[in-house]
Image 1 (cartoon, rainbow, N blue to C red):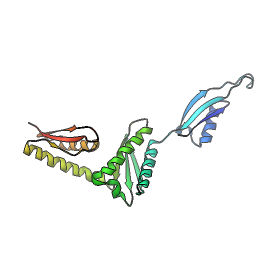
Image 2: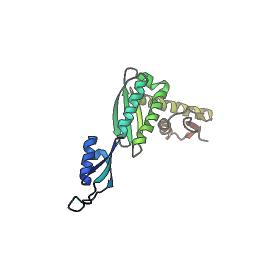
Image 3: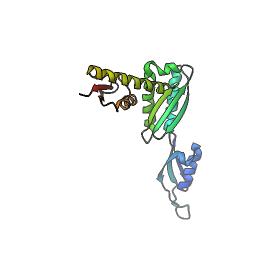
Image 4: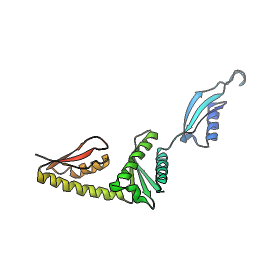
Length: 206
């Protein structure tokens, strides 16, 4: 974080000095007044300069984007990133020649990167933000796969009369399963276990 302490005859002058040194604007900074200063007699005797502390606000989305690009560069998979923010949700769409390596088996690498990026963005954000990481339309294809899987396993639970446990999934994938089966009155779904092993259980209604 860029932060400096600046002085001036008035608070306004001290702030202007700090902004000039940081080469930024007031709306992109946090300003703390350390000392409002004192003009003194005739503006000279007993005067005391105003002191302010100015720091540049950190953009959580830019920090998360830089983190992703740095990690992928070190993995030997340079990427470009498109970012779309919708309310509290931020979607990062990755593109690159070796994108399949970043998706991984069943999206495990992509999920891990998403989890880490979630931590980074909320480290700097004043309000909680939900991160979605996507690459080559993987999330949409995965959603369709999960819905089909949910329907098939729900039928199995009803047919056998036994509970069916799915593999561990991140929370947003578990939500897709819950949503897909919420209208099925023959079964019930619930989550079991602790992250990263938390998973969906489909149980027949007795």
